[in-house]
Image (cartoon, rainbow, N blue to C red; front, side, top):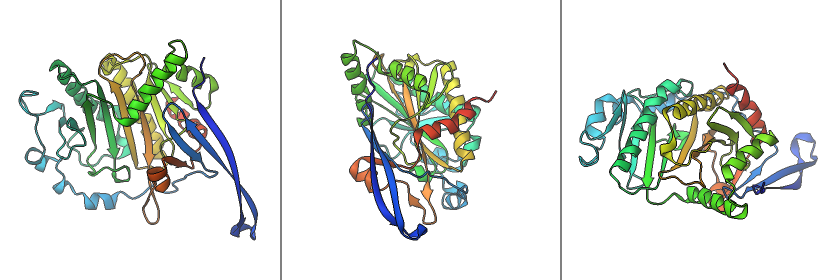
Length: 346
């Protein structure tokens, strides 16, 4: 089985420690590079621990329901509608969930899906039942654009939960993108899978990744049936990264209702872990092709986000933004061990 291209390098440095009478202290930093994702990161010798759950009241004060375009009082007046040729009703609805065009889009086909009319939902309340209709309207939209034969080949479902993750509104919502070409990061995943197959007599990268990570038992969190959950070798966030891969699902339209139920159950367990460990924010992206691509399995990533107190400093700095390297005080293998018990509940 071909190597996955996980690379490590240990480097050391020294300084005189003011907390130990200025005695010489040795520090060790582990540099990692993941050929699959192209992510370089530095695992630092200390662990991020949020000792106290941040107070969400100041976010709620700055984003009251009365000013929220997704809440009932403003929704009909302030949210865009689709053109009638896509959907006569103007938006997609399932229960209390609704999907509509983004008023400030990142892409020509960038939409917003709210889960419900509730303005604020804490992370421990993001249950499968609460999330189900929100993801369902995203699925309805993707099915409709295929019915209309619009030719889109790639799609994603994305989530900025709360301001530390870039969420501009407190009201929980997803964003979808569908297009003719993938985003830059998804293109890297596709290229890695194609190159891997070419170099290994047609082997599937994701199938081998699952098998090797499960055998190594360092970063493999759980196998819940169709979905495999693991921590990333080289995380994209300071607090680590949790990945999910739908085994042998090579298109968004391979996914069944049962697959989504399994996914949402696992997602809620990840959120339970984050909530218990005092996180209040995360980013999530769910990547898929819209036509069958045997090189690619439907998959995604969750990155916990936080502000560094007492100043509320961002967890991103010049290393991430300008050097394309992630500073990560969270050891992926330790993160895996901490999450595993959340998948062993009855």
